[in-house]
Every structure is written in structure tokens, then in C-alpha cells.
Image (cartoon, rainbow, N blue to C red; front, side, top):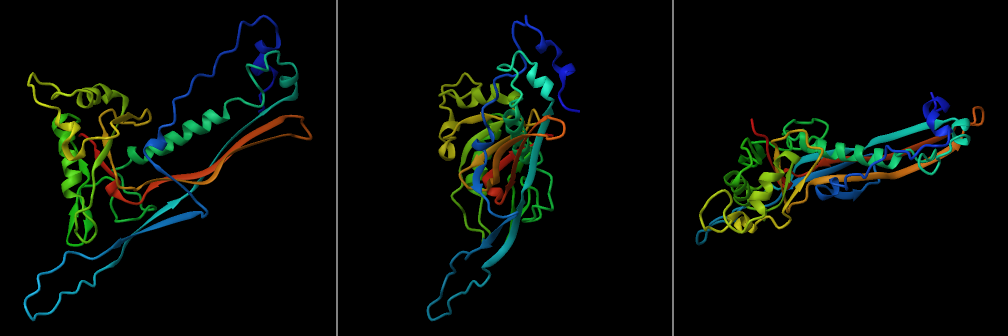
Length: 301
């Protein structure tokens, strides 16, 4: 049923002090986690390749070792979803509304609705990071897992530890020392930003906003600020994380992806038979990933 007179009965009479219901919105957060890409296809695919491994020792007069194992290893898929929302409002509700500037018939908050929906979809990639999604494909593991396969072994970007000085430093060091490519060569991987839920912000402040070692009476320097390059982008709170204890380290390696197929657009028209004003919004996008080395995740048990 369209928004009608009964739904705005108090807006039909003079004497209201004002109209409330819309609030300042949370600034965009997904764009500080995901790299934006424009898309021209319904399904975007990214292939992870294996390049050459270590060079081999050669003896005098002996043969040169050949590495013919290069080639495709995994393919990651990202399929876009359609997002839509609309409403109808009767002509009488428009004509008789005395507070159009505060309850505009053509703008009942579509932009805010779409913006917050996008944040939820983006955060869901982190919220479900330990659950394997077969439609994404890739290496057959969840985004955050203890056994991502590479040739001849596996690598973890996962821990079950709560956030504190020791576990944050361990994560930063693990990114630097353990992350390798498919051939087993070390890659230049460093933690750049800590992503936390609101409940962990006091912990993050104590860990990253002091020059001296947090939580002690020692006069030691705060090693978090310098170890493995420190955290050059500090920390950020994501209001849409569902776990109060999970935390994540974003790295300098690209791999978390927001792909925009159709930008947010709105349209409106008057229905010929009912005179109702129809307003709707639409966009098409997807959140996903194509490289687990872009993140290190903690899901405390």
C-alpha cells in the first residue's frame, strides 16, 4: 500500500514544531577496506598464477635446473548483485502535506538506505571470512584460513587470539615472514591498517596511540609503531562487524575488491491510473576478494 494520508495524519494540520526521523549518517567505511574497480561484465574472474621458484645451485659443467611449473593455479569469481528499493506515495498525501520541506515526498531517505546496505554487504566479507564460499572459488579455502595451499606447502593468515600487544605484534610479524607467492618465494607483505569492531576501540587506542610500551610501567618504546614497518594507516572502527572480538590486519597487497557494475541511480514517475508518485533506486555491485594475502584475520574462540 502506498504512503497515504493516514500515514502522515499529523502533517496535514498546522502547529507541528517540526518533523524528526532522519539523522546524521555514519561516514563511508567500506572504501577504507576495499579497492574500488569498475566492472563491465556480469561476472568478473581473477586468475592467480604461479611464477618461477628459487634458482638452483649449478655445478661446473652440470646442467641448468629448469622450473616448468609456472601457470594458473586458482580462479576467483565475483558476481554482481542487484540492489533496489522503492516506495509509492498518494497524490493526496503530497498535496495536503504542510511540511514538504521536512518530509519531502520525493526524498524519503533512499540514499541513506542504499549507503548503509552497501556497508553491510562490505562488512559481510569480513564477518564470514572463515566460511568458504564455493561461488568465489579460488584456492578452496575461506578468505581467512590456516592452510592456504601453495606449491609444496600451505600458509596461514588466521589466528584465534584476542587483540593485545603480543598478538598484534605476532600478526604483523607473521605477515612479513610467512606470506609467500605460489612458488614459495617471499613477498613484500606488511600490515598497514588494523580493522576492529567498536568494542575493541579502547584496546586499539592503547596499542597504537602511545609512544611507550602499552600496559606496563616500563620505559620501553612501543614496538607496534615500528615492527615490520608499523601500522602506517593506524586503526579504523567498522560499525558493521558482527563479532565484538574479531579483528583484522589489512596488508599492502591488493585483494579485497568492491566492483561497481551500475552506479546508484534514482528514478520517479507518476502512475497514470492512480496518480501515485513512484520513486525507486537501483544499483548493481559486488564485494569479494581475489587474494587472501590482503588480510590477516583473528576470530577468538
